[in-house]
Image: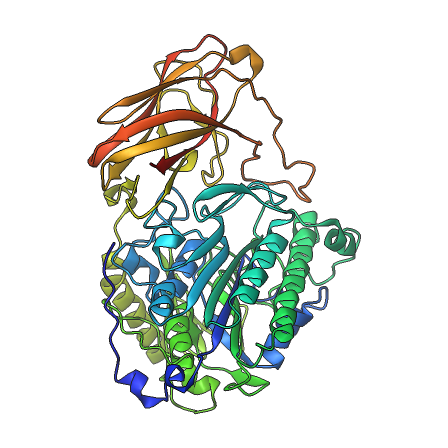
Length: 581
């Protein structure tokens, strides 16, 4: 593991360290998935109610111009690192491109170094195999899933610190239950709890109680009053209920005054929902694709009802939280974020004017407090024209030039650090000596011949149509330390295909096994979906211990190679879990 150098900064000397004044404040971070700025009642959406999320703003601070990335994993990386996501080589949302480079320092590592207990519950989406795994990035506790999306939200297959477990009920409720248990257990210690929820990201599954509120409700505000929109609004109300449960638990434990709670989303809405007139949705670099709510409550330092109009960004959250907690936070690599603490505690004019550049897949735009320059170089006055309908380049040529220079600077100084997908030389790490478990899912594998994924989106997919013994599934891997590992296979196979003989092959040895027990469950998810999905349906895959294998140190291919296929197929393959012995 990389060593982390944390040194005291001059900036951190300007305020009294909470560490020297007794127990520092706790931190709870809510991050939602595909919830747009308009998906809150406080922002004017009258077709839904989010009283608990709204309460955070009323009892603390509300940022009016807070910006994130257009999609999931880049926003998560920017929050975790305080640095623009291309710097850490986050270029995709799956298949390894969502991983943050290992020489980066996360907010969890900083808080853990300062004596906090740290935990994350939900959707990680910044790497799976240790040390990319949350347990390798500073989190003492992790419960959830590491992929970008999940195919079933009801008691699904999840993991707890690498060990496969089964969830308990609707996943967002489950994540919240686990987080509240952690908070109660560590109420006498400073804690940092990260709740990256996976809703309202599709598949559009939500408990009946919330669906019943919307399934027949007339929707006059929404751009599209379909079941996708209805289920998204229902999911947002479920999120709000869970936020309220955490706030209530903090109150019961007398921790409200001593806990910083923040709430934001990772990008714009995952559908054409109401945005208050803003142009764009998820994956867009227009206003509606990158504007997020940000609410911060900390009664000891932040006055209720504080409104902040300054431009802020996800990269600002690391330095802001560190300073609110009195933690030195200089890392080996310079931060891009700027602390917002002065504005939060009422020290006006202490944060410089800001231009925030948004980027995804070659699209760039730039925003200051009044204007946005879009990806085509058109300038808009966002105060008078939030829908970006009438360019004003001719009226404000100097502003357009300044924002264009900011875009070019980002392209030259930030995007230049990003490796292209084809140039990504980071292999999947298998059997790290500091980790007990390594997951090798179908998501991270390649396949030959006519083997195909269950869906074009790989994150929760499995391999099927494996009919030929000359076709293989493999991972390009590196083993940091040689060792012996027990291996568990997760598969399905109909009775008429039992008997396939397969070898798991490494550079040092091989592990033969036979698919000798049929397991042919149906695809699940259709009954629970409130709207047609685009991701893969899933199955209840069977866990089969297949033996032990020796892995040599170094780069190598791990291959699943059929030796015989007596039936119509080898199996449907979902996952290998390797446990270091």
